[in-house]
Length: 183
Image 1 (cartoon, rainbow, N blue to C red):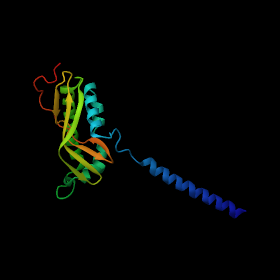
Image 2 (cartoon, rainbow, N blue to C red):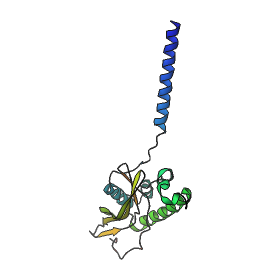
Image 3 (tube, rainbow, N blue to C red):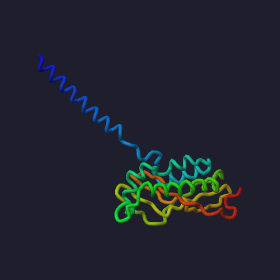
Image 4 (cartoon, rainbow, N blue to C red):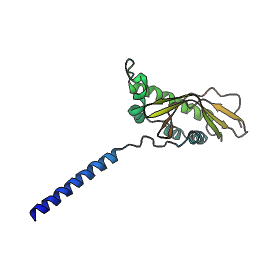
C-alpha cells in the first residue's frame, strides 16, 4: 500500500511539474504583433482614421515597436552584422526620431480634415528577410471632402509577418501643397 501511495505522489508531482513548465512557456510568449492588421488596406484605413482624429498615439500603435524591432527585425538587416555591426539601439533611435517627427507633421498637415481612404500601394520591390517581408515605396491615396485625391509617400516601409501588417518607418510629408486639403 505504501509503494502505491509513493507512486501516486510521484506521478502527481511529475504531472504538476510538466503543467508548470508548459504554462510558464505559454505565459512568456509575447504578442509581437499587437495592433497589427490583416491587410495593407486595413493599415491605410487605420492611418487615415488616426489622421482624421488627430490621434498620434494610434499612429504610433500602428508601427513596429522598439522591442520587436530590436528582437527580430534589426538582426535580419545586413547593417547589423560584420563588417558594419551597427548597434540596434542606435538604429532604433534614428528610426524612432524620424517617425515621431513624421507623425507630428502628418497630424499638423493632414489631421482633422475628414479624409477618406482610397488606396495603398507599394511602388518598389518587396524584400524578404528571415521571418518577415518588407514592402517598400508605400504610396497612400486619400480623398478630401471636395473629392480631390492625393497620393502621399509618408508611410515609409511596411513589415509583413505571419500575414499581419505594421508600419516600420515613416517619412516626413512634403510642405503643404496649394490648397488641396483646404475646405
